[in-house]
Length: 481
Image 1 (tube, rainbow, N blue to C red):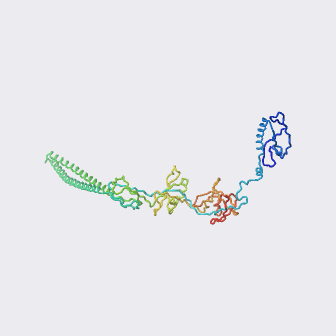
Image 2 (spheres, helix red, strand yellow):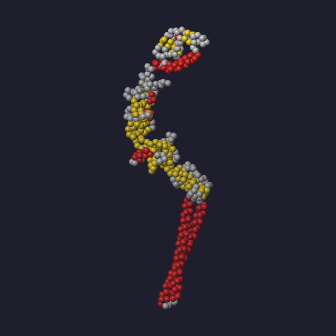
């Protein structure tokens, strides 16, 4: 029970035990305590309240005093747990705390917001990726003959045209070999003439020997000449015929030698042509790898590299999920490709899609594409990374809202639509592609509706809004801290 003093400043929780008689040590006779009346102020619970006049000092035996003290402590804890409701708690039970009410649901003013109209536009359907600029053609200039590099006819980084002279290799060793090859050709030509003359002489001798053998054979038949003499002349004619075969073989050998000498001359002419190195394509030259005075080796030493930059490729990859769209839209028309530097500087370059790879890269799930750009101003540079846009088609009368109007929640994307009574409602929407600062809405909105673009955090369904001037900020209210 609780003991209350008249001033109300102290509350004592406990049980009041009144004894009619106790024994106080060291007295031998009992000590009687006179029972006094107590003023009961509350009897609604076990903890009745008594006035201060009831509390008196009572002398108890030590053992009884300890037991009473322990009992009082235990019962006090029970009393406090059952009778501990304070005035503040009781007061709160009769009042609601207003949980779940919006800022303007209990009579507050409208929420200042900025709005925009839902518009209908013809918007392009683009695929935005990052691509890499590649030279249309790359040619490595390599020495095709050996010797000393005597002259360099261009500067590093120059734009060169096809057949422009770039390098000169010392031609003197090859010129010496050329003179020797020409001499060998003349010698072979002389040997051919000699073989032809020998053939002509031996042909005449062979004809004479054949005629003579025929006459003697006829005389042998008539018995004018001896048979042995006829056989000798016949054998001499046959031998002369074999000499003619040898002469013809000598002529063939001389002709073959002439052909070999001529081939050597032709090869030396080619080698001499290689001593002047010319550009094989139009393009921009790179670093000069060999300076004048160095010894170069045929088909081994690289001299420079030329990049064809007009036209030029931009290579990029799109997700394989867009491959069907790319193939469908590119069947009848060439798709437009745009490229711009990643830092946003410079003009947007335009080209055409000219290449679709024959397989999907399984490691990345993308398909490789190439766009060809005229690059007349040489704005695109080989190796440069650019932002690429592949325009698939144009979407007519698409529903468009500003990007900031679209919010994302647990159930997906939505917007706040402002009604004619300035009350907002939540409208779930299905979004399409993003076009610069606008978002295409596939489902959920119609043209001409009004959506909230700023101030959504302070709104809930049914909130009333105050549309402020987006230029001057008129209508803006100070937010509570």
